Image 1 (cartoon, rainbow, N blue to C red):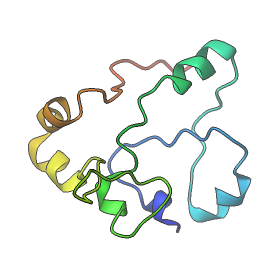
Image 2: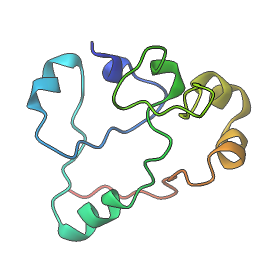
Image 3: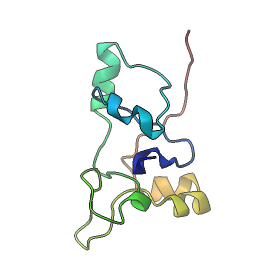
Length: 104
C-alpha cells in the first residue's frame, strides 16, 4: 500500500484527476463527483494544512510545514485522544462534513 492508502479513521480522499495508477495501492472508490457545482465546492475546500502529520515524517509534495519545520496537518494521535475539539481549536478552516446523503 502507498502511504496515502494506509488509512486513518474515516478519512475520504478526493481525487481531482485520473489517477488510476493508484488503484493497486488499496484505494476504494466510494463515489464520483460529476456535476459542476460539486466540483466547484471541492475546489474551495481549504488546502492550507496539507497531508496528515503522521505521514509527513519525510518530505512529500502533499505535506506542508510551518516555519519550524513541523507538519501543518492533523496529528491523528491527538485527534483520537482529544476528538473534534482538537480540530476546532487547531484547524479552524478545516472542512467538516456534518450531513451526508446516499443516492443510487
